Image (cartoon, rainbow, N blue to C red; front, side, top):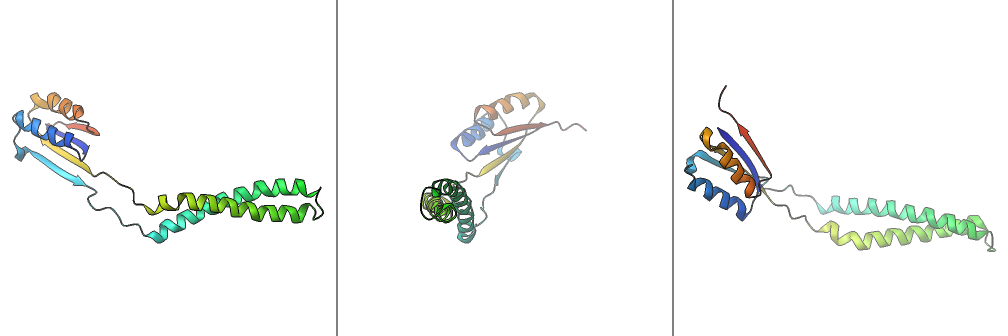
Length: 151
């Protein structure tokens, strides 16, 4: 019987491995594989491009809103609705872009902390399959799969 369990690298995984060994399964019958050990390097240039494009979208939304309000109020002002609407759009874009860019700039430059996943492959007798799988679930396994050796 082959049991495969995936975990985040943690003390719970280590405890599960030690309890499996206490149940009579030798370390030679277990295979532990660390997944995603090397995170892909993402350049700051791409991150800045993402923050600029999102800031642009927010700026356009602010510009649209303020252009409508500015055009409506422009009928009362001496500049007229078109010039007032254009000025309001420029001001709205500047406000929206600046607010979004300066509030999210530091968030985009920090790298996300990603926990490494660990896959454990255990070869055990058929009688112990439920006991081992329950033990893996008790110790916070992400997923557990069982493969019968027959056939």
